[in-house]
Structures are given as structure tokens and as C-alpha cells.
Amino acid sequence: MYLTISMNPTLQKIVCFSSITKDAVNRSRRHRFDVAGKGLNVCRVLSQLGKDAVHLTILGGETRPLFLEMSRREGIALQWVDSGIPIRFCYTLIDEGDGTVTELIENTQSVAAGTEERLREAYEDMLPKCGVVVIAGTKAGGLSGGLVPFMVRRAKETGRRVALDLWGGDLLKSLPYGPDVIKPNLTEFAATFFPEEAGTPGREQVRELCIRLCREYRCAVVLTRGTGAVWYAEGETFAEYPFVPAAEAVNTTGSGDAFTAGLVAALGEGQGLREAVAGGVRCGGLNAGFLQVGTIKA
Image (cartoon, rainbow, N blue to C red; front, side, top):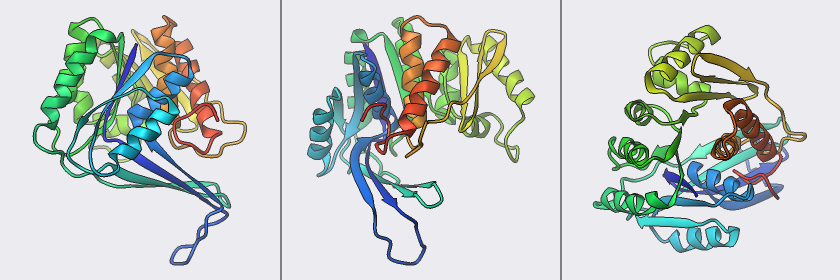
């Protein structure tokens, strides 16, 4: 079983316009409303790939029953603990005139006292039932910097495979526990490992660091680059896999999460890293062809 985890769930509104004019009334052409969040998106796509997947998250507020019912309708297996705070809303604005996709993201409040303890207990209960753990995205306020490293440590101590789609302090503090694969995008990777540099580091600079990370932490590194080729490293090898665009891109939001699902699904089947990256690219491209965030099926 695949256990996906995110600690910042989202109710996602996607609104499409023929064009968007600032400081004016804009009427939408179409819209949709979904449960989302990086880990939940990964779980959805894993399920669509035929994998046994369950999602662990935190939920609270008056929209929690709605979130649970919408997840049930989609067939998303959900485990949750009470956060004591409302679920955030995020908005995707699509301008079909110029093809731009704009994300508006609400910050969350700090979780209620006791949330982290309940989450750790739920995680420990679920860990023996799963073979692969995927931790994705940011944490809600009030959750400690030790939470994600704890989850990685416990998973590796009990023989689970671990994939991390996150960056910053959560990634840096988790590396010593040996995650199997880390998958930030290049911008997140640069912000984590090259915080003092202006702009994006070059290929050779990234290659050297990726190889060093592979040696030091015995993990694979996969870096998505938007419409650029995916860079990946394992052992002493650094290579790239070409980006494959969707036949007709509708909404690229969530393509990174779909990529993560395709990647870990293939790794869980015992495929090599290049084949797993190919699976990720395929799922990311499929996601871009749908309006819904984090899906590979209509």
C-alpha cells in the first residue's frame, strides 16, 4: 500500500475566463471545485493507476464534512486527524486568451494544540500497513520542524520506501534519515541548496550537488523543470529525460503531483529510475490535459 501524506489540505476552485482584465468585472466561462493538496493529488493519481493508496491529512472547520464527502465520491481513501482550523481555499485562474494560469493560495492558521501528537499517533498506526510513504507539500502553521524528519526516520527504521516532494528545512532535516528519492522542482531545489544565489544554478552546478547528495545520503534525486527536461541522479549517474507536452494543455496545476504519483508507482513496481521518470512525465502530461487538479482521468 502507498501512504501519501500532506499537512496543508485544500479546497480548490478553478475558474476559466476567455480573458482576464484587472480592475474590472470578469465573468467565467466554466469552473470546477475539488478537494486537493499535494499529497491528496498524489493519492488520487495513484488510485487511478490502480494502486492501493491511502491519504493521511489534517482536517477541521465547518467545511470538513464537505471535504470528506467529496473525497468519498472520488473514491479517495482518507485518514485524518482534527486540526481545529478551517481548511484553506486555493484558486486557479485560467486566462484562455493568453494561456496563463494564475494561482491564488490562502495561508493557513496554526493548528490547535494536540494536532501534531494525534497526527504522529495516526501515522504510527498506519505505517505497518504500507510499503511506500510519500510526503508532499508544506505544513500548516503550528506543526513542528521535527515532524517530517520523524516520519522519514520511522519509515526507514521499519523498512519502508520513502519519497519526498518537498523542500527547505523539511527536506534538509530529513536527508540524514535516507529517503529513497527526493523530488523538488528546480526552483525549490535552488531555494533549498543555493539560497544565497540570484537566479537558477546551472546544469553543471546542479549535477555536482546531486551526485554529492546521492553519495552522502544514498538517495536518488529527481528535479522537474516545468517544460524543460527532467534532471535526475542516482549513484554516480546524472541524466535527463525529455519533457513531453500534453496534446492540448488545459491546466498545468497539479502536474508535478501527477508526476510524483507516476514516479513512485513505477518505483514501487521495481522499475529503474529512468523508467520511473518516464512514468512521471507521462502522468504529468496527462494531468495538464484536464481542468481538474491532480488527475489523469476525466
